[in-house]
Image (cartoon, rainbow, N blue to C red; front, side, top):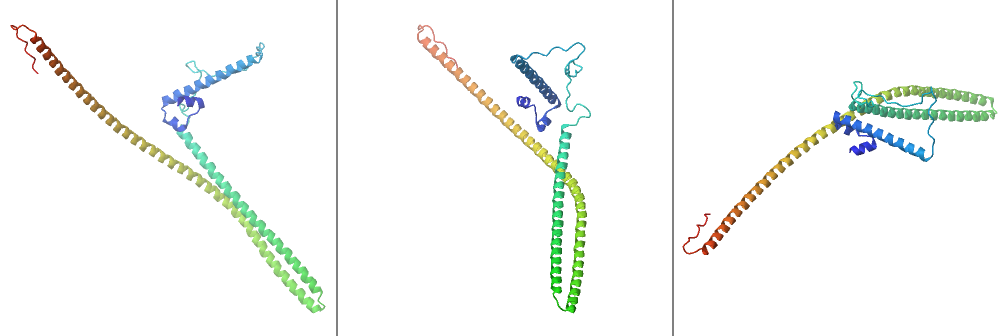
Length: 302
């Protein structure tokens, strides 16, 4: 795992939270050493490439001119100064950084949703106003064409009276059309009022954005608490299972030792009895070869 972290120069935040402060400092030192090692390795490769391409080294600077150099800060112990995240009083903890990131992401998401809603509403209102305006223009053109046609027909009347009556009728119809036109203009003004209502809807969208941001962040906190609770319950179950397995293993080990001890005692008793039988047999054989005046030895008791 350490080799993989040093290779990628990155560690997951969840894994970092599980480490102690001492382990974090050791890990940061290892990462710094790996960074220096890579830098030196790249520097050596660059020098070898220059030597291979016969690149002349840079001339030393003239007296009075100081070349550009990079110097690292030095700590009290003489080594390069290293900043360990979390040690300073103003540093944010990993928990605080994750929480700030979640809040920022929730606000950004809610802002994006509100912007999309506003654009959609504006497009709908513009389409509606344009459609009403086109309909009004078509109606006006049709009405003017109808008036011209009727006037041409009225001119054909031979009777002045009929022509006058027709003109009055056309004039009345014209007034009615003008009144209708005014009504449509009023409707157009209503559309302008709808534009004002759109602005109000934008304000509502901003309120919705803030509420949505809070909701997303609260949901994130709830999910996180659930995940932490599940992790604690799983760790307790694993600890309980491990204790039961350890208890069973100790009982099995005790039984194995008991069986081995009984087997050793049984083998030892068997060997003892066997040695006594052998001694008795040897004594019996030796007594058979003794002179008549000598008595055979007494066999051992079992």
